Amino acid sequence: MFSPIDHAMMLRAIELAKRGRFTTAPNPSVGCVIAHGDSIVGEGYHYQAGQPHAEVFALRAAGDKARGATAYVTLEPCSHYGRTPPCAEALVKAKVSRVVCAMVDPNPQVAGRGIEMLQVAGIEVQTGLLEADAQALNPGFIKRMKTGMPYVQLKLASSLDGRTALSNGQSKWITGAAARADVQRFRARAGAILSTSATVLADDPSLNIRWDELGKEVQRDYPQAAVRQPCRVVIDSQNRVSPAHKLVHLPGKTILARCEQGNEAWPQAVEQLLVPATEAGGPLDLPALMKALSEQDINHIWVEAGAGLAGALLSAELVDELIIYQAPKLMGSDSRGLVDLQGLTAMSQVPELAISDVRMVGPDIRITARVKHV
Ligand code: AOF
Ligand code: ZN
Image (cartoon, rainbow, N blue to C red; front, side):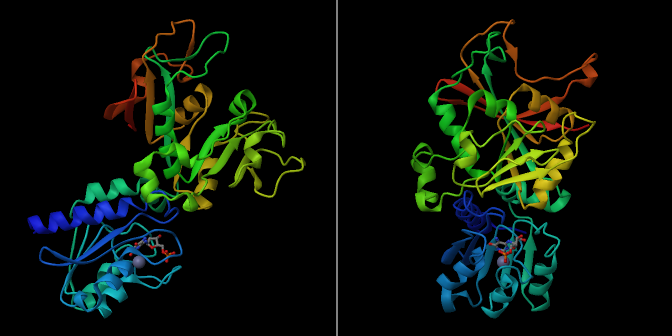
C-alpha cells in the first residue's frame, strides 16, 4: 500500500513535527509534507497552540503546486473549528489528490471526521504509515485524549546500587552535569513538573527550564524567546510550602495541590488546587490530582520527587514510563532506596518493567522503562 517514497516523505514529516516538541503543548506536534512523487513542494509543522496547523504552513509554501499533490501528515487533518479552521477543508480547497496520515486523531472532536471530509470530497486517503513513530511524538496528547488522564514520566536518580541518599540524608549530586542537562530537556517537553512539599522543604528547588542548559540541538528548535515554563505542581497536603520558597516566585504557574485552602499571600501565578484526601489528614488522592491536571489541559507530567511519591504513584498505577539515571557509585545498603513500595510479600506483587532504552549520559547510565500493567 505504501511505496518507499511514501515512507521517506512521512519520515520527513515526522522530523518536521519534532521541531514543535517543546512549544505545541497542549496541542500535539504535527508535521506535513506536500509532494509530487519524490519532489517536495511544501513543508510545515505546528509550532504553537493558536497558530496555524502543520498543513496550513505546508499549503502556503506549496501555493498552486498543491493541486494534484500528495499531502503527508503525521496526524489526521482536523475537521473542527478550534483555535484555527479545519485543515481537511484547506486540503480540499487546495485540490490535493491524496492524503496519507500516520494516525487517526484521538481528539474526540476529530476522530475520523477529518478523513471522512477528505473522502467525501473525492480525495484518496490512507492511514497508518509509520504509525508507531507518529504516536511516539505525542504520548501525552494521545493518552489524555483517550483516557482523560495525563501521561506520567517518573524521573529517578541513584547510585549503581539503587541508592539515593546516605543514611544521614546527604544526597547532592549523585549524577553528573550531563544527566542534569538531559533532565532539562525532559522538563522542556512536559506540560507540568510534579514534586512534593518534602522536596521543596528539603532542597528549595526551582523546577524550571534554564535555556542555556538545554544544549545546541534543542536551542535550534526552541529559541530563548519561546521558552514556556512548564507548570510546577507541588503536592502540599499539609500546607507546608510558603511564600518564602523560591519556586513560587519564578516565571510560570505554580499549582499547590492541597486538601484545604491556605490564606498565605501568594504571588498571582500561584494556584491552590483542592484535591480530596484519601483518608482524614492522610495523603491526597493521586488519581484525583492527575484527573484535575488533565482537566487543565496538561498532557504530560514529569515527576521529580523522592522515594515516597515515586512508590505511591507506582502503587496507584499512575506511572507510564520511568527515566532512571544511575551514577557509577556504590552507596551501600544503609543508604536510602529509590522507591518506597510498602508491604510487598510476594514476587507476584512486584511491579514489572519493560526496558525500552539504555544509554550513557556523560559518565552515568540512563534507563528508560515502561510499567507493565497486568
Ligand atoms: C491538524 N494539524 O498541525 C495539529 C492538529 O485549537 P486548535 O484549532 O489548534 O486545534 C487543536 C486540535 O487540532 C488538537 O487537539 C488536535 O486534535 C488537532 N491538532 N491537527 O490537522 C495540526 N496540531
Ligand atoms: Zn488542523
